Length: 149
Image (cartoon, rainbow, N blue to C red; front, side):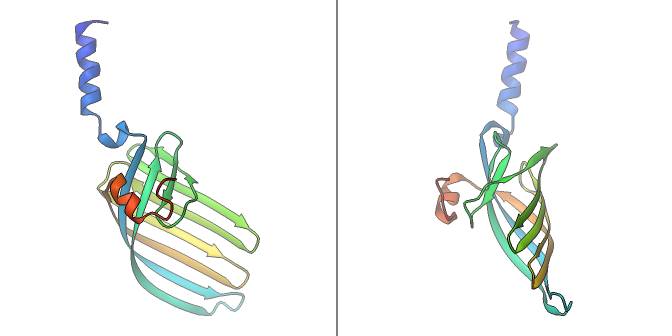
């Protein structure tokens, strides 16, 4: 290996974003969203309000999976450019849902959600935007339901 190639490789490794250098990345996103719940089959609006929330995420860059601090389930993601994309469809007895999200791979950055949930008696749509900020393993351990998963 030539000296020039070694210098190039070292400079690329040293200049790489710390997010990319680790297997896991942690961030917290603040979002403002509309949350509309409708009764089925009548179509009567149960509630329609604007909500604010913060959600902490742990992203496994090696396996392309993520989870939030409120649950221990991992979900598949894909990484496109500098974005993490969630596009999860759920079908269980009595529930169907579609969860879509767009987050920055290297926070800070824009956070977008577009989710819907449907049961036999209710349809719920949550759409919103916000911003994500980097955090760390120490904060994850303080707030996550299952911090070691």
